[in-house]
Amino acid sequence: MFSKGELEIQETIIVLFVFVVIAMIGFVMFFRYSEARISSENQEFVMNRDKIMSVVFPNNAEIGCSVGGDRGGKPIACVDALKMLKFGKLERELGNKVMKVMRVYPKESGVVFENGEARGQIACTENNIGRCNSWVLHDGRAEGMTMSFSMKTPVLIYEPVSGSYGVGVFVLEEWVSNE
Amino acid sequence: MLNKKGQGQQFNWLFIAVAGAVILVFFTIFTFKYIEIKKIEENVQVSRALGQTITSLLSHGGIDYTVTSANKEEGGFKVGLFAEVKDECRCVDDNCINMISINDDSYSEQRVEGQVMFMPSSVRTNAFEAWIYPWYYPFYVTSFIYLIEPGKKIYLVYDSANVKFAESVRDELERLNLDFSVEFAKNADGSSEGDKVVYFTSGKPSDGELWVIAPKGDSDAGRAVYLDSGEEVEFVGLPFLFGAMFSDSAENYKCNYAIASKRFSDVSSVYSGKAGLMQSIVRNEECDFVMFRGALGSLVGSFGKEGAFKFRDRVIELNDELAGRDCGYVF
Image 1 (cartoon, chains in turn yellow, purple):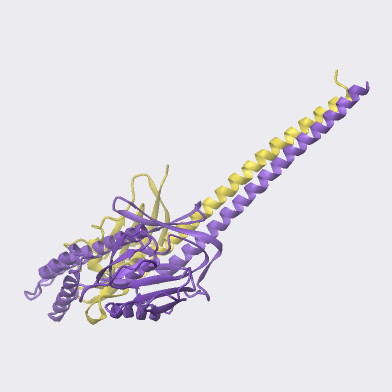
Image 2 (cartoon, each protein chain N blue to C red):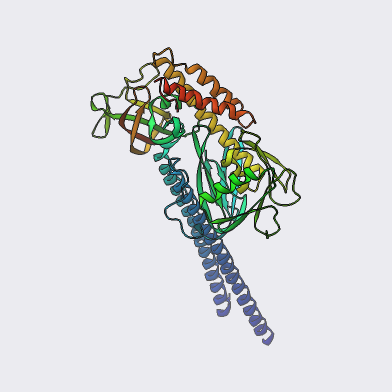
């Protein structure tokens, strides 16, 4: 049999042991949570940064239009209909995104948006230049993916051959794997 | 009896000491780990502030000649507390990217993809002077990002044979109106530690950071030597030369040169394709886009070489000629 004093010490050891175990669990959880929070905030930041960069993507020289001559090919704020046809042939790592430009004006030959759905799209190829209204710049979708994010930005579309301008939307979609 | 009581007391003290030590160790570890987490948070915040500055600059595109962000403060963009900011440009196969990290912390790593960015490979600072500079060759290709410590003094040391080129560099740096002073001198006697000394001389200097071998004649392709490592790099025009001046590592410079070359090759390929499409659409015998495509191909092939400027000028000439014949501008 244990004496009263010995029992008290054993109780204290048990209390201390339980305290240490609980504190250690709390300690590990707190730091795991802190690390996870930092990682997720970082991911969110990178995603937001990528979104901003995607919105300004039409300014890139690979699709943006320029006015030559004495202005030295200075870029102006629009996209070039012919350059967009060639952009898809570049080897670019753009991930699981869909990037396209749809012309909505002039109205008679443009895409019509009804309840967020684009209707009357005619995909642009090298054989129907001037008679189409939708340019797919990149399609990184794969089987079993769902759209996680979509954004539309207005753009000015320049047709270099006719020298005319149209109004369109630059559509950016982010697709993620379901797994 | 007394002996047993004494043993009990001794055990009590031992127990208190062990329990106290356990608690003390626990709180010590907690404190250190907490400080570590707080440091990670600070590093991540600095990294984000830097990322926002870069995004803000890039979102201006190449429409303006030189752009600094609207929220620019005196003494550069504040990025938070003093931190060791590192830039490492890495290439895997043909794909090169800049990777920024703060205080060597993996949580703070940030990829700057597809962009040409020149900055010191490692710098301890709490602010940056940041700007972008559009690169035309001869059409707009991309905008280069530059990040340097504010308040730096840059010595441009010249000799009589290279004074003209050195003057053009000085004038452009002064025109940018950024937070660093430019000293134009025949020697670097007045320079002190921390100043950047760039030589535009015929002979190789014994000290300083960079020795610039100016382009010959009408060419815009020159060479620069990093004086500490002795490595030689090529530059094409002032945007690249500024890159060599503000990047202290030949490896990082070469990696960013590779990014710029890839962008140039991509944009040229798009323009070549566009010219091909224009040829098939424009039904005008006077519109010969084949010649334009040939000159563009030669320009891409000779990029970085001394004679490339001749193809660059030919491409401009043919572009203007096509526009003059109502065939339309390619760029």
